[in-house]
Image (cartoon, rainbow over all chains, first blue to last red; front, side, top):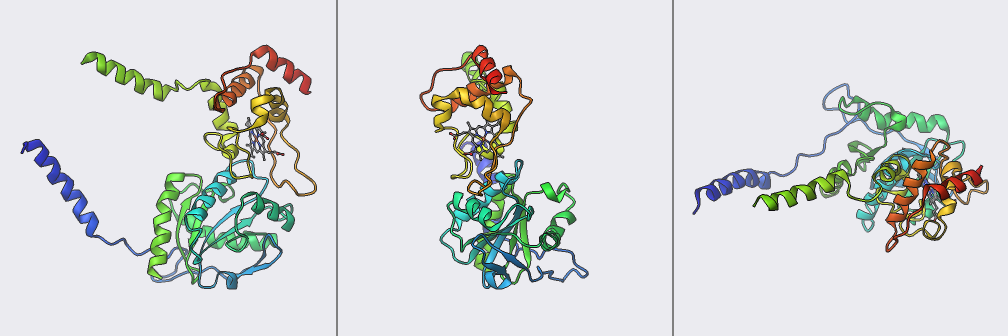
Length: 201
Length: 126
């Protein structure tokens, strides 16, 4: 055998084999912690969805969910994030264990009928993907619970209003992963983590 | 051998520099339109219309300047939750490049528009 090819094969195996054997690291518990072992969780909430139904922690009982913050008339990055949420939605369309929650940060204009019109134009299932509005201070308050993990991360640029993060929450309301919803490659990396969370629960 | 390399690298060069038609129109599109209408004009379900299959672009490009300059109004009856923003400061040359880029996204569409017509359309729009 040609020595060069042999060397290449050797290098190839030494890279591939160990990575095959390793099972993926368990997903971390994210959020602001006082002790390293803390598992911060999202507090209870009370919002209204596109059909005027109440949405609270009960709504996502025994489900994991993906969540973001947006507003319907957003001219800048929300349309991209919505497109990426839709991509994840389609990926897990048949899996009832996965739900979606998009919070409007424009609570003044994004009324229930407008959220309904928005959801209709995306052709999504109103039970699987909730678009919610509520008291402004409640939405902004809970955004801090979701976003704390993002702001804590030194690698991510600040400015929550324009952040565009997609956040993965487990069935006990712990944040387990997040990605930048404006970067499709970043979303590609989130999808296997969602599957991993499903497999571990 | 050298000849093959030459062909290969000129192809590569071509791909990076955008042998695609209307690079300026494309750049403007990426900056001002792609967020909603998608990287390649594919749109997003019924929320943001596809510009690849748009009848307006295909048959009435004269309507584009007004649409781009003024945007679309948000419906007061909530039927349309999304609106297209106004871009009041696009020059005639930029508008021409943009329209020609949009035309190039259509299948089997060969024709292009000239600066003179775009100027008339833009004047008629104010």
